[in-house]
Image 1 (cartoon, rainbow, N blue to C red):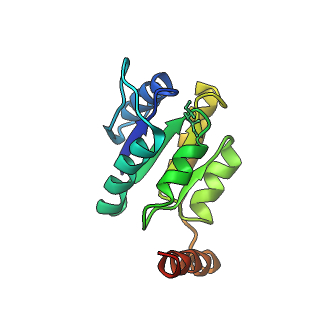
Image 2: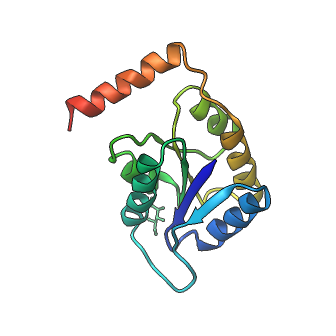
Image 3: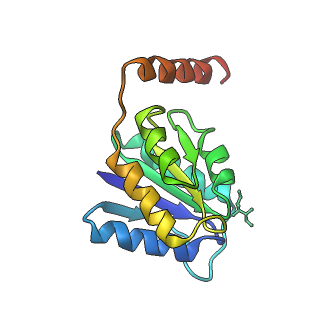
Length: 148
Ligand code: RB5
């Protein structure tokens, strides 16, 4: 599975650790920055990942800022993106199974690195269940169409 990851200046260390962790597990991770010494506004970082995920069917995105919230708000403005900001494993898993999200967001100022690793594992190992959940995701897509 192809993964795109990015962060703002609040989360460079965590982004680097998570990138290394996922590569160690043989995921194909494209690091879209930023790196030590750089600064970026979170909507700009979110746009970079969101565009890649929309253009690359089946891929997933990971966005890390201070809280994960700004990244999720920004990414969700891009058509075709369903992003969730999570701080624990249960929501990370369920947002794949029920919401079919394609972008995972979390906050480097909210959770520690070990929780972040558990969250990405839970997220990437879970599969969308479809069925009644697909009908609900279709309703989300309808909102996207109706409120362009
Ligand atoms: C940057 O200071 C901070 O606002 C950002 O990382 C994020 O937490 C926004 O949601």
